[in-house]
Length: 132
Image 1 (cartoon, one colour):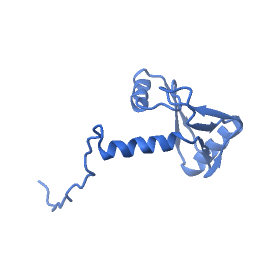
Image 2 (cartoon, helix red, strand yellow; image 1 turned 90 degrees about the vertical axis):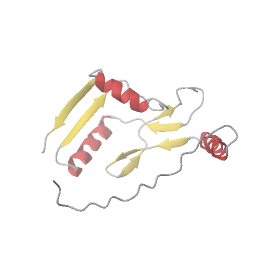
Image 3 (cartoon, rainbow, N blue to C red; image 1 turned 180 degrees about the vertical axis):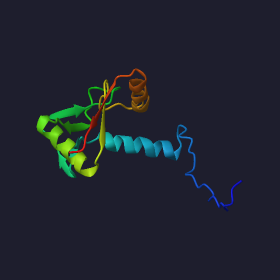
Image 4 (cartoon, rainbow, N blue to C red; image 1 turned 120 degrees about the vertical axis):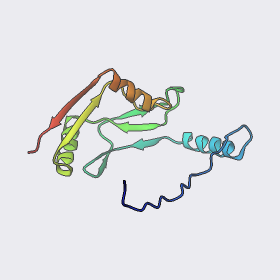
């Protein structure tokens, strides 16, 4: 038996929209997608709070439209990987690094499901980074 008094706030969710053909929300979504696809963006790595593009750029494409370039992300070298690990060790005394195989940038619908499949196939290599 609980001896506490609970006052749970009423949930206030955003409205559920239909996105039916011809609806204003569908038109707004199409406009936003067209705007976002009209320009390529640079996606830098963040290492120790600093934005770094790396050596060379790798193009990001949606999987369903490989001829279209959404943007570019930097390519990390060994020095940058070491910097990232050192920055993580400063931030947290015990860091667990997890590397999944088969992950690629630019996935659209199935990124979450792909992550689950990677885990279920036991394609993860986990290593503990000890304190210095």
